[in-house]
Length: 635
Image 1 (cartoon, rainbow, N blue to C red):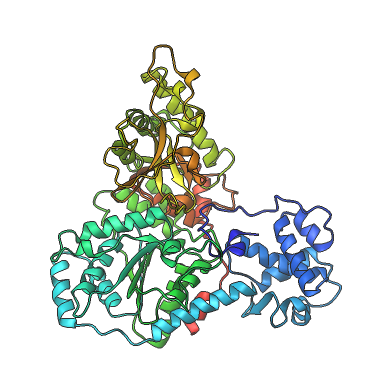
Image 2 (image 1 turned 60 degrees about the vertical axis):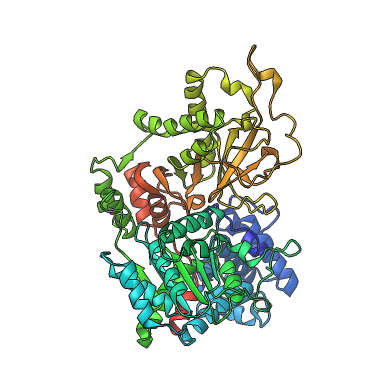
């Protein structure tokens, strides 16, 4: 069972799940056993289906098989599974002796009113996910049908004339006008298309309107994305009249905005009965938001408040069930076309990075369009921005290891700010966690390369520390830890802190420290003769302009981050990215994965893999069964 099924109020999961029946269900025979041994069901799918059967009294194998296939669909990211999938599985693994499958479904307790499964418009849902989808649809449609908020158009026009003077993209101005005059607006576009510039102008326009200033909430799925949203918006507003930047509160994670509860991970403190007090809620990186989390967010926002959703629908969706942003964009645009109503979706298509990284922009566009020949041609163009390599060349190894060695030397010297600045120089992105193409292998490899190079430059330094406490080791948080102030997606680094009396790094304004360094943080026996024992190694995270310092032993949810999965990289940007592609047969290799990976780079991307893997990715768009788009289109 997925985290999405067990704890819908819990942290967003940031790692992919690969299809296949790796886990065998012992002692299970019949249709379920045959599907399991064929790799079409996992043991977890079968256990949930059998539990549902016991709860409802259903014993017929073919209906239990349908239940297991529905559970499998949610585990792999879909909200539902199509009837055609159930029929195909029934033909392949069922005995077919009891008549038509759909006739059985209509008579079975699993699908009875109030039962755990529901068949709607050719899609089979776990009842809970159908209810979540319906709640999201009703909330969105209600906002679309709510009368527009009052707007002083004269003041709005004057402000936009000033902010967009000399700017050549009318789509950004149109997006601001849309958001100011709507209860719900969606602003989409790829990296570099100006989404943050647009939302900054939107906030400036709202604060310029008559009346009391609106209460504004900026939020994002991960801590890293929230920090970047805060920084980008405040930078865009810092030269605005009236010191607008100081009126914008720091962005938070969606979980923190809603108020996570220690007593109930499935619910939040803010909900329909206790809504947020904000007048405006801006959500960045909406493509990463699951159906469950979107339902919880929308129900907590007052109907009269404005909701602005930012994101790129061509990126990877949440690892949990749903492709909410893509569904919303397609469904609402179809509804607008059908009803000839006022648009609620603004698409930004002009890339402002084209002048500085034209080949990188061209590659991203080719991948987004699924044009394999054009993508390979761009990769083979021979320019410095993009390249395709079958393996890591000596030159690429130097580009990977160089920033890592600089990072380690800065961390050894206690140069905290420098070390944090170096984190975004280069990142290796992988589809998988394990295996030769996965982050575990690449983290070990890069760590070994870095240690080898560093010891050649600074002999003996590495022997000061146990393996997990090497200064310069990059980290990324994988959970929200409110006690430490470290949140999912926050980047960090291990640093040997100088002894300044407080134990904190210079310039730290938010330091979280335990009462003592954990035992074994420094091993006296590892210090070379005559050397001075180094200061304690601590993990330092940066949230905006604050530094948070934590003894490594207190961190329960961090991973090494020389290499990360593409999913975990969402919401981040790096100067250079190396993308490690698996073999063409990998089920994780999709168009959205490659597009997301390539668009994490600001200036340079190297794809390590075969041309066949590139073509396989572009020919395999991610398919997530959902009824949200059609429901919005017809609503």
